[in-house]
Image (cartoon, rainbow, N blue to C red; front, side, top):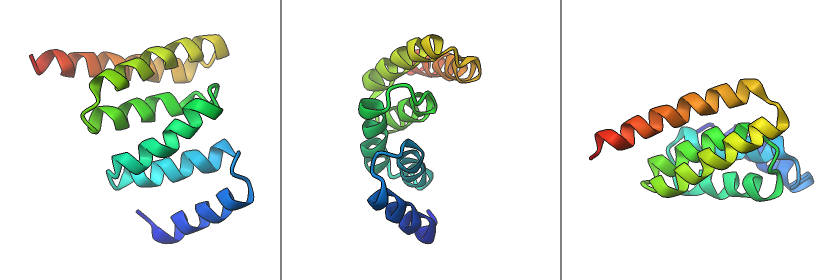
Length: 111
């Protein structure tokens, strides 16, 4: 994690706590260090307050899966697929479908 970048993101967040790009950046910084609980905290803000920010679903689901919360990850994948379809975000939809398929295969392997 780049502390200077995170400090800068928090300064932006303080100026405008409703900016989804800044919130996403903070979550991504925490995820890059595998600090899943902090990453999830900021992904949850996006999921609750910026439901159409389609890029969130891929990363939030991954963070939950890495945090051993497979049921929550699956729920987020499913909601995200629906949102991407509604928003007609074909790029995000394709990425999310691929990630969800891989997630399902990994879950099957754990049986």
